[in-house]
Image 1 (tube, helix red, strand yellow):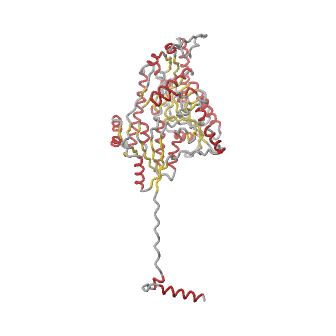
Image 2 (image 1 turned 180 degrees about the vertical axis):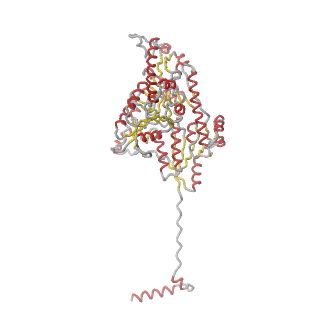
Image 3 (image 1 turned 90 degrees about the horizontal axis):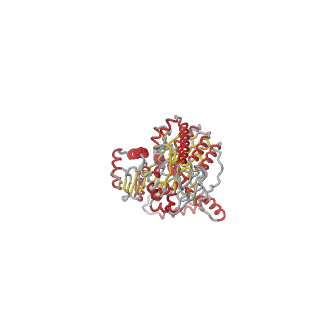
Length: 605
């Protein structure tokens, strides 16, 4: 029955077939066409990194949504991540008016070079730029600017404000003493113009920086140095002028840059905004969330498992030097370097058996002679390879703490030297007289008024003060000579308060090598017997300051904190605010017997 059923079905099928169909068609019916699958649109991914702010070098306190101020090391880490990330094809670098020094420029240029070395292009986009942020852009494969943009690459300029005439009008007398004819830190308060020595050293430093500016642009943009200098002399440059001169590659808006990258790759462009920035868990719901919020506010780090791997300690010595604890301005991120804080960090690194070497990154104009010496002494006790890397500035007290290193690295544009001493006070008695304030004085001891803020020095007080400063200078030059393996007489000729660029300091053997922080770290690892290329865990010290304490002024030197007047001045006239900050900072002369400080508020433009 089953066989009969299949036979009937077969006959019915044949009867239903078209008359014109041949036998083969009946045996092998035509195959249905396979529907075409739409090809996936290819995609190209670019990391978007914005450079904005001042990029402090020390570890920064965390806020609710990340670091209050992005540090230089975290910015560099974003470039390093982009270089190694297989999903990233290139980088769009948006330069948004950063405030950078020469050392930081060199660090960022090398970070960009690291991305390009991996075969990934870096495209710089900027609305406008001055000398130093343009040098960062010049390290990229392409520079793009909108037609309304402008470059203010107009050369170098040093401005120094002098307050003597103002003081005289107000009845204020600046009593300043120094050791070294080039130690010009106090001249703005005692003179109405530069001394010949001050002018000579500033001209030489400015010459070094201008040559470095021209050379870097010429090399990066493949231009003749003479042409670069002519373009600078004709500045500022509109976008059209900059393109004609070869300073930029293309006039376009940022969206047009994105479109061109997609067109060139014949793919859809995916831009990863805020690439590499650490994401903060902001889920503060429930009791656990409240505890987490308190930890963030108090600056406490999340608990992690303690590592047992070998480490390299990187110590950051940033800001003006004072005795006591380091401080950080909550609003600006500007820091001061306290001797107690750095000494604690040195002892932690030196006493940790897992730390194989120590690198000290110095970015300081100096300050207290006592604090500088205490930190120098603790560094002298380091029993491990100890290397110094100099940032934007490492002068006076900043140079002092570097002297005992096994090797000193400086950036070509580092401002260093200033081996000299200054000390004194601002006598306000004349101002008090003008405003009707009378001060009665009772004394016991011939020199009891040496630190009085009311009266100027007597002859005896001035002589005693000068003798003390001479002693500090002798200590400074003797220790510097020992650290540099030079005769004291030879070192002293290079001292006298004179400042130098990193390139000049190398020629004079005040530093050992030109190089970046990474170069210093590589050398330290080699001295520690670590195989080249081995990546050690990094112990970053000192730890970031507590943002809660910074906000309510519970830590650090209170004299470093900014007043409401200073904030108002910053909004109206930034340069005036700098002058007020300098005056305010120099009040520390009344609290410290001697200062190792350079004229660090010289404005290089």
